[in-house]
Length: 99
Ligand SMILES: [Zn+2]
Ligand SMILES: [Zn+2]
Image 1 (cartoon, protein in one colour):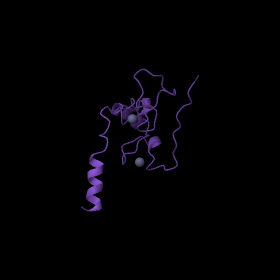
Image 2: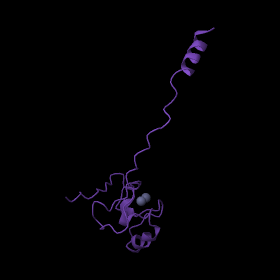
Image 3: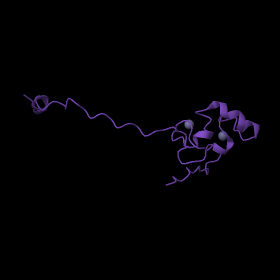
């Protein structure tokens, strides 16, 4: 018997995997709840790293307001003020959490 085969057999006789895997913790909220105060710490889209109240990716209906103020990157489909592809230095800071 080869050593490799012996090893595989030994392994297959080992303790079986735990039956109950711990359920994953609820994922941190990626998106703000409806009704949060715009500009607050809670008003944040973690997925797109912009304030949720300004996230045109989550709320495409917001795009019109940006287009109306000429703040729109047609190429990337984002407000120009959110477009990191056009503005690599851009950093949108999440508002600090108020105690
Ligand atoms: Zn978003
Ligand atoms: Zn762009």
